[in-house]
Length: 180
Image (tube, rainbow, N blue to C red; front, side, top):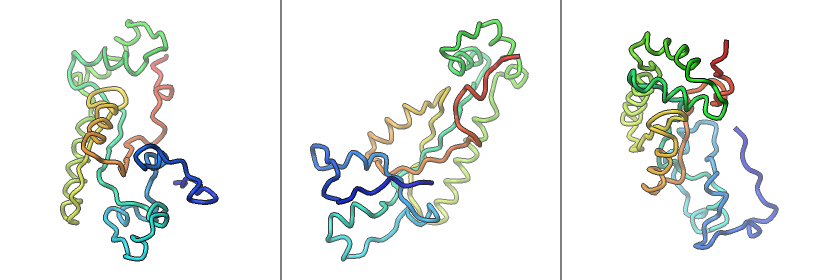
């Protein structure tokens, strides 16, 4: 994980109307262990200095599980595959051929149930540690969508969000082309 470079002088940082730093929207709290920054206490000396506060990692207020998505039922298979291949001109006939793999599983991707199990396990671990953090789930290609999840996080006031990707490599459908 890389951190964003600090400006030469903290006073030189651009500040949006209302006093918020636009770069804060992209800030990822640091630390060798992400759990260390979930609810780290702030010492009084640092709390009194606005520049020092801005430079410190802030605790996460929510967790976002980011995934690829998958169909939930037979009728979802073709629309899901259209989302995956959007803009590539893959004919429906080819998508139907690929869809047979999902149809063999009842039209349901196992990824969604794996994500639900991961969320339950993460919730149990957070609860066991006394961490009351909401967990949101967003997919690139199917409901619940990433856009829906980010809108919900924003509407709930979350700005310091820990994102956990279920993908072992970049989430881009160019890696998942449905070609023979």
